[in-house]
Image 1 (tube, rainbow, N blue to C red):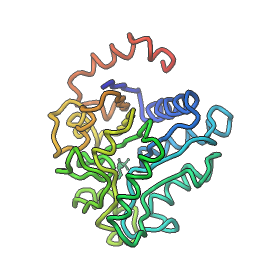
Image 2 (tube, protein in one colour; image 1 turned 30 degrees about the vertical axis):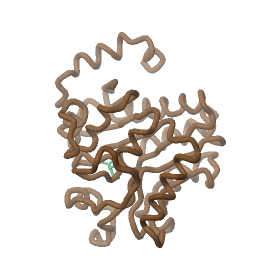
Image 3 (tube, rainbow, N blue to C red; image 1 turned 135 degrees about the horizontal axis):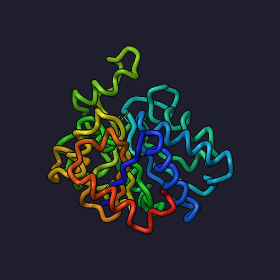
Length: 261
Ligand code: GLP
C-alpha cells in the first residue's frame, strides 16, 4: 500500500484525477470502477475539465459503479445513476452504453446481482477501482461484518450510513434502507485501487482502514490485502496516521511519484 498525503482536499482530488487520466492515457479501453459521495465530486469536476481541454479521452473507457440504492431509478435525483450522469457522464465523451451501475429498479434482486458480477467478468474485470470510505468504514455499501469474499449483493444499511446519507433526501426518511453493492471480494479482484479520503471527520476511520487491524468491522481495512493500492488523503484526514513521516518520505524518494510532485 502506498499512502500520499496532500496539503489540502483540492490537491488530493487533483492528484486522484491525474492518476485516473494517466491510467486512461496508458490504456484507452480501461475498465474503470467508480464511486459516489461528496468526496468524489471535485475529482469528477477535474476529469471533466481535463476531458474538455483534450488531456484525457473517455471514448474507449468502460465504467462500473460500486453501488446503487434499491428502488431508485435513473430519474431519481438521489440515485447513483443520476449522480454519475450529472457529475461526470453527461459532461465527457463517454458512450452512455459503456457506463454500468446495478439497476436500482430491477425486479429480481438476486438475478441483478448475478448479472452485474457476470458483466464485470465478461468485460475483462476492473483495471482501476476508485474508492471512498463511509464514516462507518464501508467501501461501496459493504457495511461492517461484510465478508471479505463477498460478491455483489443487496445490503441493509447501518443507522450510521442512514444518518450520513439521508441528509441528501427530501424528506430524509425517503432514503432507501437497502442498496446493491459490489462485494469486498469483487473490489479486491480489481487490478488496482485508488482510495481517496478527505476531511477531519474521516481521520479516525482512515487510520483504522490504513493502519488498523484487518477486520470486517471496518471493511475499508480489506485494502490491506490488495497488492496495488494507493491511498490519497488531505492533511485533515491524515491526522491520526502513525506512519505519516514515512509516507511523506516514501512519496518524495520513490522516483515513480516524480511526475506527480
Ligand atoms: C456512500 C457510498 C460510498 C462512499 C461514501 C462516502 O455511502 N456508497 O461508496 O465512499 O458514500 O461518502 P462521502 O464522500 O460523501 O463522505
